[in-house]
Image (cartoon, rainbow, N blue to C red; front, side, top):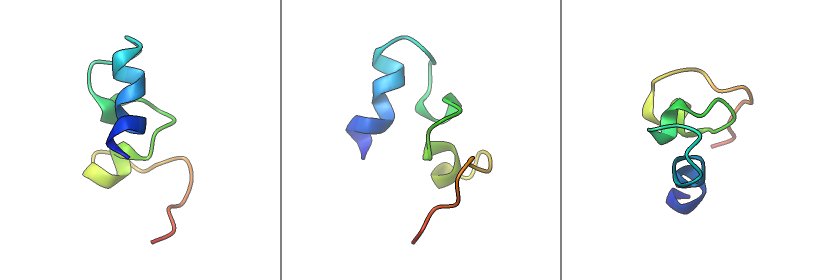
Length: 40
């Protein structure tokens, strides 16, 4: 999961993985609500 979350950072789209809108990372870190509901 870390590899997937860091792809937008490596591509230079964002500085932190939780800033990428289409990532579940923001919801996992508790920064924002994701676009899709995560199944736990």
